[in-house]
Structure formats: structure tokens, C-alpha cells
Length: 306
Ligand SMILES: C[S@@+](CC[C@H](N)C(=O)[O-])C[C@H]1O[C@@H](n2cnc3c(N)ncnc32)[C@H](O)[C@@H]1O
Image (cartoon, rainbow, N blue to C red; front, side, top):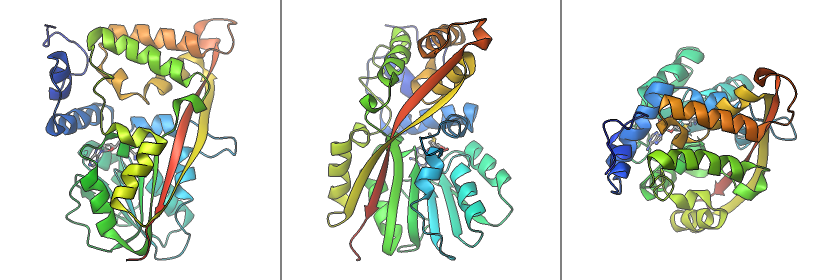
């Protein structure tokens, strides 16, 4: 058996279970995610705000399009993290009624700090139990890059249905099909290979419910909770370009797996990733340019009026 204490990367009950060849339970998943976000609050925003689609939109801006710019619209950002989506919505229309929920106190602190006091209501809650949010009280529920992490997922979808008003809608940004973005599979495989050298079961056991990651399985899952809803899943690709070392660092941030690597292995992985993503080979490492592209899906659920 592996020496768990000396694993050296980010340790949690979840990684310890993997190292013991066990299947981590839901409590271990929550603890693992809390630990990652406690030590790296704001990392999703750093990666996601750097990547843009062909129309120049980052994924927050693309998701924000699901919100009608009508004064008084009540919007819940579920798993709001450090609050970039809430800020975009606030800047677009000061008269939206905004609420942010997350289970990470460190992420919530960043979100609170970036918006004028009192313009957003924040709650530290798990998405599986939104007890502070009333029935039928939101016109739009958004979730940017977090559904993928949630297990069990059915109670989350039940809670979203409960809080949505008649005529409300739910929109989420999730992983798109890997084949949609050039070199994405290679980036994924490189990172997972490095992580599996330490934790062989990482990948066989993933964070969250894998059904969120497939377009068909996502559709089935949504239909189970919203049987009469109009459901659309659109695929897009967002990319970033820049100095190879920076691009590699930011790209690795999209993979929770990368946070489990001990410092030395992480450095090796980042160096291989810079080589993989480099689009020029001229000059010193810092001067090389690289490009990273990522597939994303935008889910839109419009339930039939209750
Ligand atoms: C990848 S980050 C995305 C944050 C933000 N939406 C963004 O895109 O910048 C995932 C967020 O989901 C939160 N999260 C994960 N599982 C959760 C759950 N079950 N309930 C509430 N928050 C959760 C984490 O704390 C983290 O802030």
C-alpha cells in the first residue's frame, strides 16, 4: 500500500481513500473540495476569465446571456466561488436582485469583497440543501463550472426546481466534449498520467457525478428532474494564448487533479505541459508562446410553468 502520510501533495480524506483503493464517500468529496478551495481560493476565475471564445466572450459572459436584463430579476448564482459572474451581472444591470451561494468560506470572502456591500445576498450553504432560499423565489438559477463537482446531484437539481419561480430558468456552464477542442485530450491525459503515478485510481474515481460531463447523460439526468422542460445543450470552445509557462499554469488550474501533485511533480508536469502547448519554439522558456483551448457546454433548462 502507498505511504499515505508521505503522499506529499494536497491531502484529504478523499485522496487518502483513493490511496487505500477505496471509493471515497460524499463527505470525503465535500471535505476535499473545501480543502482545495481553502488553499487556492479564486483559482477558477483566474483560468476561466483568461479564456475567450471566437466572439471574445469568456465563459462567465456566455453564461450571463441566460439572464434577461430586466430590472428586479431575481438571480441565484449557485456555487458562486469568488463572485466573477455576480460582478458581471451587477455591472450589466444594477437593479437585478442577486444572491450567491457557496460552501467555501474563503471563496465567499473574495466574492463579498469585490461587490458593494448589500448589493448581493450571500449564503454559505451546500447546493444539496438550500434551506435559506425560499420556494419559487428565483427567476434564474445559474451555476458556472460547479455542477460537475456535486455528488449526489439529484438533490441539487431538486433544490433548483424548488427555488425556481413559475416561468424561471436554470442555466449552467459545464465541461464540453473533449474532442471539441484541439489538444484538450492530450492535456487531460498528460495531467492524469502524472497524478496517477501518485494516485493510480484518480480518474477511475472522479470528483462529482460523471453524468454531468456527457451531453447525452446530462440530458437524461435533467429530464428526470424536469420532465416537461425545454432543455438545450450548446457546445463552445474558449482559448487563451500567452507565455508558455503562464498558459501551462493557468491550464493546469482547470484540473482539480493537478492540485494533488506534490511540489516537485507539479513542476515536472507544468514543464511537460508548456512543451505540449507551445506554439513557438524560439527563445528562452519564458519567451515561448503557447495556446490552450477548452471545450465547454452551456445547459439551458426552461421548465414548463408549474
Ligand atoms: C470550480 S469552482 C467554480 C466557482 C465559480 N462558480 C466560478 O466559476 O468561478 C467550484 C465551486 O463550487 C463550490 N462547490 C462545490 N461543491 C459544492 C456544493 N455541494 N455546494 C456548494 N458549493 C459547492 C466550491 O466551493 C467552489 O467555489
